[in-house]
Amino acid sequence: MGNRLSKIYTKTGDDGTTGLGDGSRVSKDCLRVEAYGTVDEANSAIGTVLANKSVSNDIRRCLTEVQHDLFELGGELCIPGHRAIENEFIDRLERELDRLNSDLPPLKDFILPGGGQAAAACHLARTVVRRAERRVSTLRGQESVRDEVLRYLNRLSDLLFVVARVLARAESGQEVIWDRSRIHKSD
Image 1: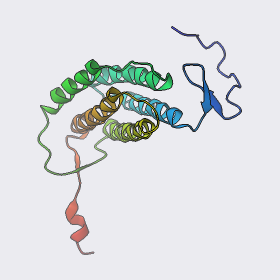
Image 2: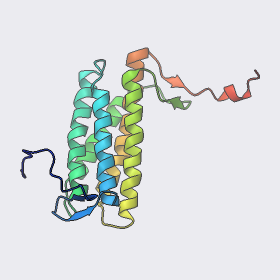
Image 3: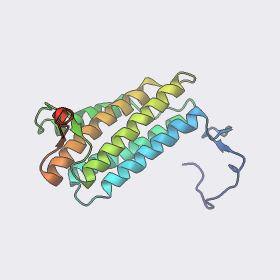
Image 4: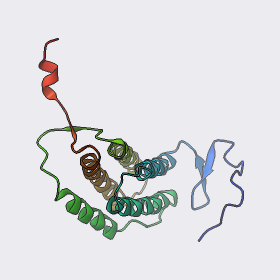
């Protein structure tokens, strides 16, 4: 393992730069930093889901594994040329997605983010993962990013959608359905 932080502040970023994992320094607003920073934000959002006591041990196990994956993914983005995310990670997400989705009724309508504290937090995490996916896609337009990184983020946002559905049903017994007819109702 690399160096351990014994001192939290280094003052090396006071000039608006930060160090990548390979030792190079870049602007804090460069695409690579924005991409792995948004992945870190997604990881924190998943932590907010896990902070809810209503989250089952099954979901907790699944999302904790995802958090570890996101550290690996952030490391891959932080160290140009580093490989961390493998197809096995994506296969695991797909298995979890299929397993959790199998007990849910088919969607016939759009659902709104909500359905309880944990479900709403999971929907927020899903949208942050989608933003991370967009940031990584933008980075990929200028620098090398492996396919597995984008595939992982895409599959993760799908998984979080299904987890949010599971959580909404566990917390409130139902999901919040988008009422399309409301725009046609007269006051």
